[in-house]
Image (cartoon, rainbow, N blue to C red):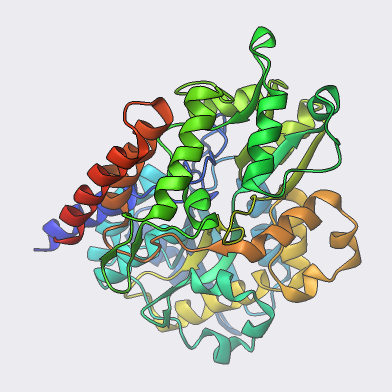
Length: 448
C-alpha cells in the first residue's frame, strides 16, 4: 500500500497546473523562466547527516542542524541561499540550516520515498499546490500551533495568502511567497498605436480593443499573447462564471456566463487574430522580451528579464468583467515532513518566524520583484514609491484559489479545462459545443 500511495502522490504533484512561481509552469498564461540554471547540491546520506548532527553537540547545548530542500534553481535560489547563510551567522538559537536545491521534478521523486522511510529533510519549500496531495497521504506535520509558538501576528498577512497554506482548516505551511497573474504592457508599443502608454486596460472590453490596435502582422507584432495549454480562469471568473466547486464536488461549467466569455475569447483569437496561434509560454516570454507583444498575463518572474532587455513596460492587475477582477493565486510555503523530530520542528519554526519579518520579506520582494503581502509592508513608503512593486502588491488583493487543495485538481485541468480552452482558442469547436463536451468530461472526473 505504501508503494501505491507514493505513486499516486507523485502523479498528483507532478501534473497539477497551478500558478506557483516555484519553477513550474503556471495557470493563467504564466510561465516560470525557461532558462533558469539548474544548480543542485548533492544530498548527504541520512546516516551521515545524523552522525554530523551528533558531533555538533556543544557544551552549551545541542547545535541543531536542519536539512532544508527547495526547488529554487534560478537566481532566486542564490538570493535565498544568501538569506539562509545570514540566518546561520546571526541566529542566537544555535541553529544551522543546510540547504539543498534541486529541480521540482527531482524533489517530487525523492520526497515521498524519504518521508516513507524516515529520511526526509527537516523542512521543505515548494509550491502551495503540492500541500493537499501530501496532506491526503498524512505526509506533512500540522503546524497550526505556529502562530502561538512563535508569536507571529497572522492578522498582518493577507487572508488570501494564508488560505493557500491551509487544508481542511489546519495550517500545513508557513507562507514564503505569493503571486497572481499580472497584466504586462509595452509602453512604447502603446504610444506607437496611439494609446496612452501610462494607462493599462481595466476591462475585458478595453483589453480586446487595445489588442486589436496593437496587432500588426507585418511587423510580427501582436496585441496580446495567449499561450495554449493554459487554463484562463481569470476570464471566466471576471464574467461571473466558474469551472467547479471543490467544497461540494459540483460542476459549474454549463452556464451562459461561460458561453459568453468563451465567445469573446474565440473572437479575439480566431477572428481578430490578436495573439500568435498555438504559442507556448516560453515562446510568448521570448516575444515579450523582444518587444513583439503589446500585452501579456504572467507572473513577477518576467520583471528582471524585461529590465535586462530594456523593455519600457508597465504592470497592472488583471482586467475586470461584469463580476469584477480576479486572478488565480499561487505561491510557495515552508512545510515540515511528517515524522520530523519535535526539536527540529521547533527550530524550523524559528527560521520561518525570521522569514516572516518585514525586513526579510521586503528584501525578497525588492531583489526578486515578487509582491509583498504583509499589510505593514504594503504601507511602507519604499514599496509604495516603487512603481513595479506597488502595482503587483496591489494586484495580490484580487488573488483567488483555483482548486488548490482539491484532490481532483490536476485531472480537471488536464482532462477538462485545458482541452476546452484549446478548442475554443484554435477554433476547433464553437464555444457552446466545446463547453458541452467539457461539462460532460467534468461530470466524469467528479464522479470518481
